[in-house]
Image (cartoon, rainbow, N blue to C red; front, side, top):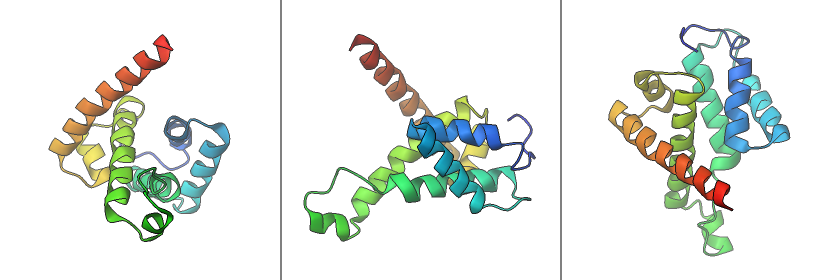
Length: 140
């Protein structure tokens, strides 16, 4: 994705790849891509399409956390749990946008609406965590 002005149709394969890496499941990926494209228009710019993808992902998966102590705390809309879930999804998406989509730090910053320095930090730690996760899987 070197050029920034691609149409949503031109980005379909890229969005699907992001969805697959985020969900790890073909059926879930298709659903996420469908939801993203239902919420985007035919003329949606690339950055806006990626923002829509992020919002669809977080709405569907990012709010489901294992940080609930009781059923009541899950239903109360615990702000901390939601914040942690969104942060984990954003760190993973940051790495994928950089590695799979080839977006620059400033473009990722626009998509996630975070400062560039935050994006750089997330890339550093996200890459470390992904490598560590791969090492753990290989040794199992």
